[in-house]
Image (cartoon, rainbow, N blue to C red):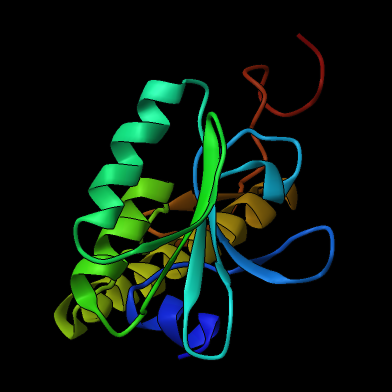
Length: 165
């Protein structure tokens, strides 16, 4: 299974790292480079890898044990970081790797939700169109009354219209 197919199956987003390789980035989200985050990458044609970077050895050791329980294999074991490989077709291994890396899943909308969002979108566009039309008519010297643009009447002077008061 490729990384793109794995990402699509589990509703994840792929990104390119500085070497132009596709990864699924995790935590910490504010790292300077994509590869400075915990991430999932394509290890071989049939296995994916998860690179985990932590600030403490205790956290790394605990997460490593959690990932080894469903059958992930350790390929690099450092003091506070390491790499484990897993079978993307094995759901418990995949879920554990996604959770350990801290990858965000994308929200998936149902057809009913998409329908509601489409109606709201058209309503908002119509509202913006009406607002821009009323702003244009006000700029041109017209006032709106009851949703219709009306021409402003020139105001009569209180002096009787002859200009002398």
